[in-house]
Image (tube, rainbow, N blue to C red; front, side, top):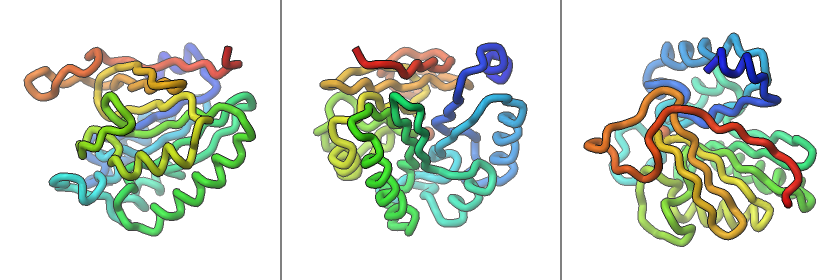
Length: 220
Ligand SMILES: [Fe+2]
């Protein structure tokens, strides 16, 4: 990936997590993952996944929930876990959805950040970067599934951002899928590392490794 990025030289690289294999537990995994990005000669933004900071607590049986210690460790290697990137025609917003349901102070701080970020759109489209997809097929589905953002937090998120959101770009699933609901493209990035066999994970999109190349221009 570093060689591909070096040859294409995009304006920005966004890693939508999981950046590390077991960084939630092992600091050396986070350090190794950060080192893999150290040669990139373009701007980088990252958001953490469950393998980097732990998972949403209270969602099914979560063996490794997000904690203050895990979050601070992640931030010490990768910086802000949620961010705003203004590219002129579009507003790019990265969120740490692993915080949802945690009850941590950072969760409320992120909601306040999001409210302020959304107010800066001034009618411009928003591209939202999150680790987990918001849902499987339908924004109103109520199933609690660790593959997606918890339903009540998804609803609050979509209500807060309103119609400005035109793209939701996610990671997590190790499969690529593009699914349009209303005016919003929900694009699952494939993993750069590996796919899972059908015996371990149902086939929901296409299973291959790769990356997504976005261009943020005028909406026709
Ligand atoms: Fe994940």
